[in-house]
Length: 430
Image (cartoon, rainbow, N blue to C red; front, top):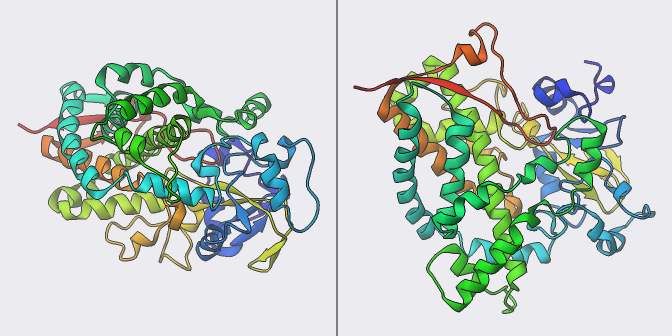
């Protein structure tokens, strides 16, 4: 494969079908300096873990800043250690006030506050709501026999679940759902030059939620309630200081937005696989205990996060490849999860893969997605109730073509993986 001729970040075909290239890189070039943009693509499993475990060397400040983050700054740094320079210029980078772009010790304090709120007890209480909501949302689509499940089911479903967890009142759901999706301004969302310019200068796309959640935090401090908003209103950082309403709103906004988007895409991929593969569907129906493993294998083979950026703040070396300070680095979750050194026959979908939980579809360590347990519950309960209420789930051929010539529409982005539409046919159980 002539990989140097392929531009992962600009080729629209690779945005839609990246796995031929990613599989090749994971197997042959676990660390690859691509020639078109000067990005170091880290595709090997162990190499990705090295980056994730080394925030002093690889900063998260540019996690969604695109292929030329230094181009967003008033000047470019020089030298073999640009840590101080970066700290002085974070305000120029997109999402600079969010936990996903923070490094220790700021990230440590914010994550400690967040993880103290998403407790097993609270998630268990939320799952009781998930079971009730799943049936209510399925009532709206199953009787039709056919449904476009991304827009008609997954998007409203995930919004309602995260809203319940947070304690957002039902009368506010429509207002929040109507706000523009932060995903519209992520880098690589479209391959056009104007879209790229808009995305890299999007800055803090979650600002649309700040006023709302700041007001709710202030309300909870005046009138405490036993929900996540009430918990974060009363919470303190490890040093004992309390976050301002705006600081708390930033953390809640990330949980609210990210808790929807990745789950929508995971649901779409899982349901597409079930509908496409009758043998897999039959095995899962016959043995429901396999459903959690099925979800993990879906995350491994085609998870919602293909990759995310880091910035080398120190001149270093990774797997023999020299990396100069200031170099954009992209950790490729979607490739590392298919690394043959870690997973046998990695391109094969194996429901009973023994080491599947080693995947990094939801990140790793301190960068593990805090909403991962919630996403797993939403997908598992959806599959369980669909199996309870149907005898068969199929791809709608009018929307997606025959089995020999499927047509699917995916997000046109090099960072995320997911269907934008999925129409299914259902045979209801008597």
